[in-house]
Length: 607
Image (cartoon, rainbow, N blue to C red; front, top):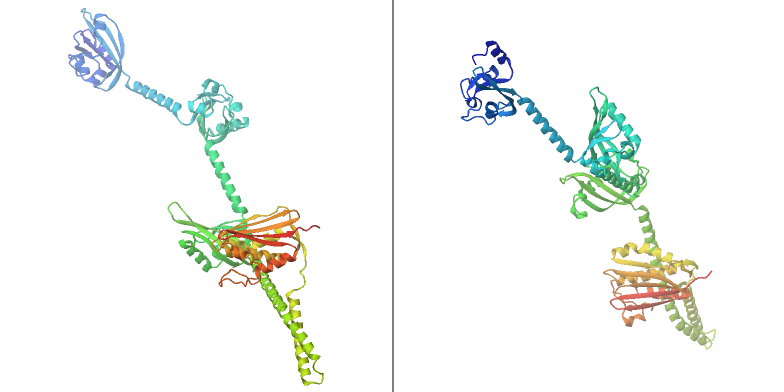
């Protein structure tokens, strides 16, 4: 290296690449400044000892190619000792003395190589994300064509071939309406991006998808718009669920709003949070004046509110947090008294803490009024039955007394013929006869009373009578666990008769049926018209009537009831008399321990 001038060496030291020269026995003849800074001064040492600290030549060294074949080689090598990557150029050098050397040029490309690796890795990661991400990814042109899409978007929109998809016109083939695409462009070009933009798209099969677009504008180097890129999230299922929830909410809201009963909800302080139309009608206060403004204690007293709260927390009134029934009367602001029934329950959160209460108030004013009127009517009918029974008893007594009285009267008349008017005993005889006549007149009046004038007859629909009595007996049947089955003639069953007397007949039959089923049972009531006659059947599943008693049930004073039951055996006899007065008939059939059936026959009225 003695031929190298100092100037040349200075020039080589100025290089930012590493340069060194070795001879054919791997001894380093020259290292420039850059190379020495990296590996230290190794002149006179074996190159592999300097570069890798090894006793053997480096595996990248092209010794034969340089010294034997006189070739030039370029390669990329990683030198572990300095943790760097070099672009290595190796070329032969012919010396003036006829020997050969190898010139190696090490250019540090570590940064660029690793940046390229990062870029390559990032590109691969992006490609994996693009391919496998669970939402649709797209790149589109400004004119309205897809430039690239991922498999998820293809599948989402029902396409198998990417080429077919990329040929679509977005405005016509993808967007539900062309104006939706135009509106999207206006928004994204104005703001540079859109986030969670809701828009409907059309699948290949025509089904509508509800999507969320999050995308941004793509610009060229001059700042002009190239197109758009972004992601697509299918919200169709969520949208469907939202619609179903909304429909359910609207349906529930309509049920609450349209309920004729008062439905109200309160927080734990009693402040009213819900007040439906039924509550407005019953309580006479508008929701706008109540919700969030009025406490429930302002409607009924603190005492009642406290009582209801205590019952809600007591399991004895329907279970914990429930109140099945509580009679409640209160006075409205106009002075009217409302009678009804309150049921309520507590609402709990996920941790079991009380958060609110809800109440349902049923206005029973009309029903209670009707029940009272029906009760009065029933008492009136029962009284009429008693009076009729007493009348028949009086009639029988009067008939029995008439015969002996007339016998006594005739005897006294005969005795008068044998005693002269001047005789003192004649006067006593006249007095006795006068009293007998007075007693006979009294019996005649009693007979007249016991058989009053026939009640007013009119055209009557027997089905209406039965329906009215069902209202009267409904509660009693329910309390007695009696299930009623009605099978009435669809067409009106018209007869000519006394409504009060016929009502009394069926009251007797229904009462007897109840008495025969103390543990509950079934009561079947039917009406049929056959050949101009109306048949009314009342059949119970009670204790039945013994065979020896069947023929006596219509006799006066006959009864099989024990002393604990009120009655003197006149009910069915009165019924029998009324039916006979209506030119009808009544028969009874029974099987002890199983059933009893009364069949009433009446002529159908023809106007």
